[in-house]
Length: 261
Image (cartoon, rainbow, N blue to C red; front, side, top):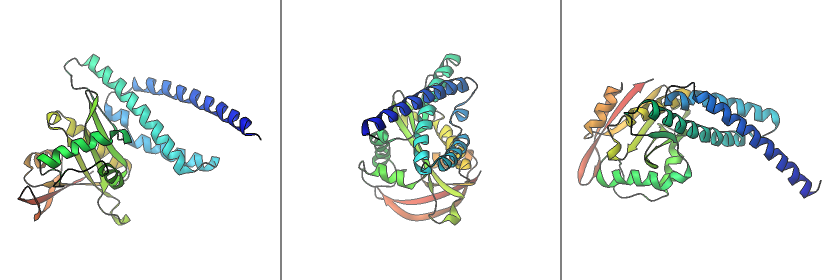
């Protein structure tokens, strides 16, 4: 078969894919009208069920399951972002008191600079981020490497990324697969607006979908607000390491908090 003929067939397949994506988009819009919260929009457990089915179907069809999963996670992420945006518009019409439109979505490579900017704010102004000097753009790749699967989320508000959150493995050995550490950073002007609670809910649902039943948070002990927040959400302090770090000339104690989910 000539290259021109192969390309013609590929073009035909692309046309069919676009038509099917358009049909899927219509179904997603219809499904959005049945949902009442952002949690039901994101629904990580449903996402994982779809991915497992895709991997199985890919294997049967002779397609690399890893490739199929990568493609489908991108597709699903795009649809979720669109659905969340539509959901946000619906909420704003039905709840006039709400003015802080925001969405929580999976991080992508375009978020690199914004995520680093948020993190560097805490590097320079707080003990909450442990580095003692600004991190460069490469730190974004470090974060992607340590997260548990794809459990890496960005928070958008007012047209920009204003925070991020993630789950990461507590230990590289499979014996600890039931446990994950969580972390989140929000620009100060967006703290105490309920976003921390939404991020924790998102990470908790994500963790459950991955078979995780234990969440850990390590918090610099002087951050009483964070300790109180986690206590209110059902975490319990399970230990402290004393004077194991030093930043800004201050000794750092680290509190570990735990929650079974």
